[in-house]
Image (tube, rainbow, N blue to C red; front, side, top):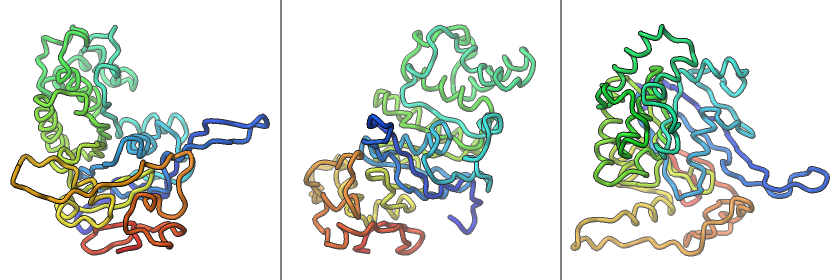
Length: 324
């Protein structure tokens, strides 16, 4: 991947901490370590999937990349430019290139605005085109996402979940961005509609030459849509690899457990399940060393004290584990 692809975005040692409690003197007492020293490279034109259990920091990482949430530490480089150092107006202009598709299409749409108003809002915010040009642009993007233009004057409550998600996608793409964070865009949809929306996202990537960061907890969906996959656990990336390499040759014990939990529609398949013991530690008080050592049957004394760094085990397959 790195030999023939240009780097679009680099995440360098990004951390995000949320202070949930302070002392009488204002000193932080309780801190949630949502994202912990994440390094990630995203190449132009690829779809990188980010997977992990709920609460592992996937969505927070996506929002830190888009600067919707300011990272506590670290840098985000977009085409070599450190966007964490941009002022408010500079970041506002950068948002034309970086957009977000939300998880819940109904909650992310203003119920008092028509489809035309919703999709046209980004064009108005950036002062792009005349009113006639904006309306024409809305018609074009609606056609692209499979929505007839005669629905422009309807309101969000008049649509199904799948149609609302198409509206959200149209709004995200109306500015012609280069990079889109898809934050679990099909998890709120019926199973019958998910495939349609996933295929639409794939088609739009080719037509618009987009780069995606696809966040999900559904490993089957991520395998279908992604080129590479990053596995997160308690705010850290523990493994990154090309999708077939990851599924066929997982290296981290946590990745193995996740993959073994995927339902297989074959009663004759007797694949051994990797059952994790214990609960996910609290991000308020993460364990020392490797965060996964409290649930790992292979853990050693080194795992309890020393945090493993991501290292290449071959063919760009990165894993953060002392066993490899």
